[in-house]
Image 1 (cartoon, rainbow, N blue to C red):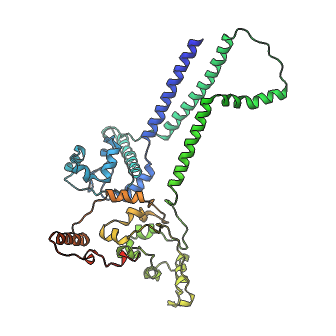
Image 2: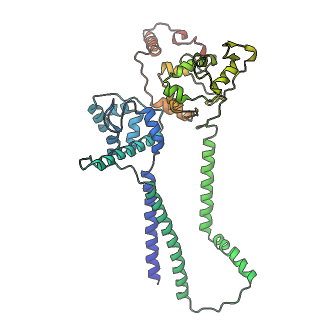
Image 3: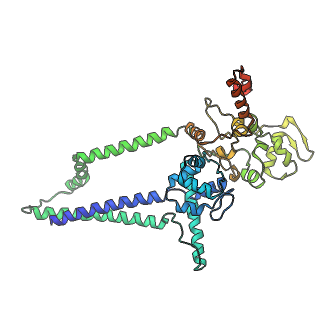
Length: 423
């Protein structure tokens, strides 16, 4: 009987080990959210790439599906030219194969964002390959592996849970049989009253657990680790408002205006190109169109009321004007200095780099964390293009003067700009 118990224990350990490796394999393969990846792909990649077939750049489906190293792909997306400059054989081969076309760096995408894009590309490419197979025998090669389905994952988890329950039940049965076989004699059982039976059932298990010092230490240790992790995440995300989406006094759809109507961001937020702040659009900008467009809309009438405008007489009454109380979404701390013109005009950064795909948002929300770590990562990964940029050309010219020994004043380096002191 003892040999059976040893064999069973060894079998239990094997099952537990196999379960752990199965869960680990599923989590490793199923990382990345294809739904999020689709939105990121359309806003960042679709202009140059298709899933299958060449556009400006190559089709991403065959490349991503044939490359098992996601870490390399993430590095390539963040800064492909750095890999080419480092003579990475894969990077050089792709660069040469597609005519030396330079792919811009996407430093604003986090590792998780790129993983989501890769998951979407693999899933969509697999659908295309499966469609080719069902269309006829002359279809292409096997579909790219994009991870197990939800049914398979939940089935494996269910099997693991059932196996664990079976192991526990059989272990208790074997333990009971061993005690019966190894005991010298069976003692008569004395009758127990109902009150004693309740007391035994209530406290026996707790006392047994408390006597096991290793188990008590393990429970306390797990509790400490869980509390520490919860506290760390709570403190780390303090004052981080990713996903913040307040209800504004007027329902304004960026998806309609910036997406469908193709209105440039700086038509409304004109300050982003010439000042520190992007600025809230003046209602007069809205009236450029909405004096005649959608005049029957209740939301447009809120603009009329705020300006004291009468659509019948087409006159303004300043005594009836009441300013609209917009709710701020992106709010940096007072000690953090950020200049929109420095990034948009000098750096050539697109609005979507920080604010996300606003052209798809019916209601704007905070897309990026806007933390110091996020900004530093972008500054480390983004390449500076000095060609044709007046700011950097002036800086290079001043540096040349310094090398020649010519005296240079701070004004030549932009030292008399208002934003240097008044921010």
